[in-house]
Each structure stands twice: as structure tokens, then as C-alpha cells.
Image (cartoon, rainbow, N blue to C red; front, top):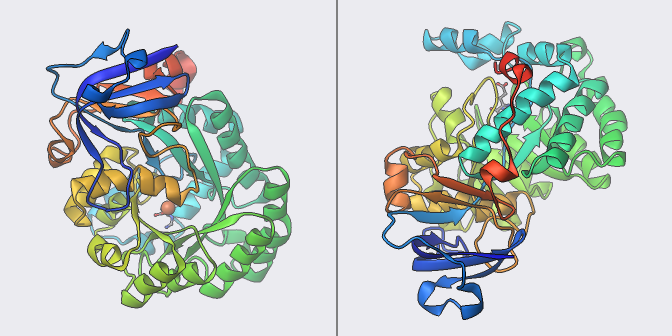
Length: 420
Ligand code: NIG
Ligand code: FE
């Protein structure tokens, strides 16, 4: 059966390539059959075969946008780190807390102790909350297990979530998040464990599409990152990178050299790095929530756009640097902190984010695309993001079905117990 919305006050297709043009159609209509869009355009041009039984939104102040794509999250982990947040509020730095055994290492301890079932239940609940905010596609990284068994445990959670929810899940192995404590005196052995055991297992079981490395003081060197990513490439895992988050370590240049699909964070990347990303066609991913929580100088999107580097926006949802799963909030912050226009921010979490995940059927509203969409009761995307993405979407479609039907609310005590 064909479903149609007509007289939608504003519809953003997010097609095209101008960062500041979200493809606005006024008084628009959209029709879809099953999961796929079949027609998009001005209501005046809606073919008659799509018009009967159309839902008429005349007179409603609203806009429709493509379902959002969160192209960088650390979705599954054990526990939270609110205690460290309080310490950071009083002046402790992220690096000081990590050096004292907290930070990523403390989440690794809690993640290793958590059963797969528990991680699954919490992550599923989180995904449902993200879906209600208009998100239909989520990239999920491992990286809090840091043993072969615990990394595989996280990636299996993601595989189950992809199979049991209407969300599109894209998995990334981040075994190279930090060197786990038991390997600090012989880190070369950990790199070998990744290249010789973990990555081959992940590739053989088809558990991830991308391989990520955190290149930073206290994490991995550029040389180690290159070794790990080249090993991943030989196994068919495309590179992604966490780079230049805490200082300019030449990470953007490395991302270009290894042919990464995206380079993420980039708070400290300079002109050389930007030029390298442009030449290699790497997508830059800005994570304004992480910059905000760590009080870092945010990435300025303008020189990227001037150089022709597409800029995506994601949450970086994780218990340390970005304990907020709201992509709409990240979009508002991208405008305020990264100097992106609301149109550029919206494109950054739709078409450009899909590109950062090598996905071709989400991120735009166009024929043959998956019908993922959100309807917001605000006059336009400028009003919405200006108000810090208030109100939340009134309606969300995932694969052509409305949220409540596509992704029914989980009920029961198990969810209540695992809420935090
Ligand atoms: O993307 N930079 C490294 N990894 C995460 C933070 C992880 C954590 O603090 O738990 C990030 O910001
Ligand atoms: Fe991250």
C-alpha cells in the first residue's frame, strides 16, 4: 500500500552538494510504498495515483527531514562516569583522570564485568530513545572490552540490535581505543593481538564494516594506528579514526594516507590536515558534545567547507566525553560551536553522515531511498536548532512505519532495572 503526506509546509530533501542548501521544497508531498520512497516534490505536481488517501497537513506549522544518521557512537558500555564528571567540574582534566586509572579504563572494567544480555537491554532502550529523536541509523563502536572475547561481546550486541530493531546499525571495531592496563608494559603485543586475532575474527564473523583507532597521547601512536588500520584493510575493514582530539598529532594526515572513510574529532587539526582530507576525499566528523564536555576549542567548519571537505555531525555518545545521546542537540551545538548553518548541520547528520558510513539508501528524501523521516512542529530548521532542537519530533518514520509500530516501547522490570 502506498502512503502519502501532502501539503507539508516545508520538506528538506538534503540532496545536492552545497553545504548550506538542504534542498527545501515548500508545500511538499512525499509518497512511499513499504520501506521505500516512491515520489517527492511540490504538492501541486503530485501524480494522481499517489493522491488518494493522502494525509493532508495543510495549515500545520511543520517540516519534514530525512531520518537522522548518527555516524559516531560508542553505544554499548557498562556503567556511567558521573563521578568523573563531578571531578572535571571542579577542575580535574580528562587526561589526569585517565592517568589515575579512571576514564576509558574504568568503563572497560565495568564493560568486561557486564553480561552480553545486560549490555543488549540497556543499548536497546537507548536506541529507542534515539529513534524518538528522529534517528534511524546508528554507527556503533566496540572499544570498551579490549580483550578478544569482550570486543566480540560488544559487536554481537550490535549485530543483535540490527536484527531485532528497525534501526540500521553499522558496526565498527575499536579494539584500538586505548592499550588495556594489562598490556601497558608490552604494548606491541596488544597491537599484534589486534592485527592477528581480533580483526581476523571480526572479519571472519562479519561483525564490523569499519576499523577505528584512537590516535592520541595516552592511546595509540600514528605508527601503531597505521599498522592496525592497514591490517584491517587487508581483511576488508575500512578505516575510521579518532584524531587530533586533545592535540594536533598529525592524525588528519594519517587518515588521508590510509584512505579513511572519515576522520573524527579534529579539534586541533590545522590547515595541513584539512588540505590532506580534501585531497583524499575523507569526510570530517565533528563531535560538538565532546568538545563542549571537555571545554575544547571546537572545530571551525568553515575552512573545511572552503576546502571542499564534507562535514558530518554526530553525538560521539559515550560515558566519558559525551554522555548525551541526542543528535538534535549536537546539531544545535554544531551551529553554535562549529559555525555551521542550520542547513549545513542538518545535511551533516543526514546525507553527509550516510557518506561517512558508505550508505547509499539513507540520508536524503528521494525516490528509492528508505522512508526514514522526522516531522518537527517548527516553522523551519533554523527555528528548530535556534531553540536547541525544541520541540522533539512529533512523528518519526523508520522504514516506512511510524515509530510506535516500527519500534514498540519495551516494557517490563528488566528495562527499569537496567535504566542506568
Ligand atoms: O570519542 N576519544 C576517545 N574515545 C571517546 C571517549 C571515550 C571515553 O572517555 O570513554 C571519544 O571521545
Ligand atoms: Fe568517539
